[in-house]
Length: 165
Image 1 (cartoon, rainbow, N blue to C red):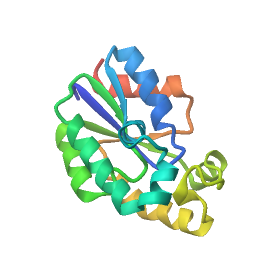
Image 2: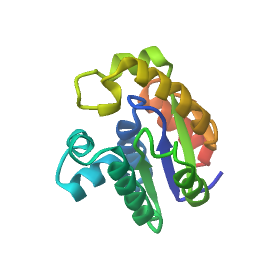
Image 3: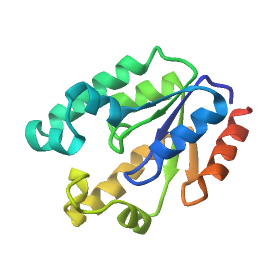
């Protein structure tokens, strides 16, 4: 499938940001990270934003950042873990490029995402697990599903093969 835009979607700890940089380098494309853009716009971390303004404010900022990225072409976009879970965002992403789901098993998410407050939705492990399972239903609507436990370079090669590059 030829495209000029790839959106990496998946749960926290799936490796979206890291893989976006590697894939962008290989393609020679722009790399954008939704969470980093929100932090730059709001001049604070995602954790601080959740603590001071709440999740609804964060989700509105996320939606706005995503909409601003729509015209950008030749880009790899690392979304936040919840970006694709929103039906409107999912529709925009699926129409604007190729959504690649980086799928990891729950034990890997636990291993990669500490409950130290840097990821506000990971602090309560029971809620974290519930969120993991609920979001999988949304992620299943991505164009491509990859087992993200594979090495990063292997994932880059799989995406390039699938895209025909």
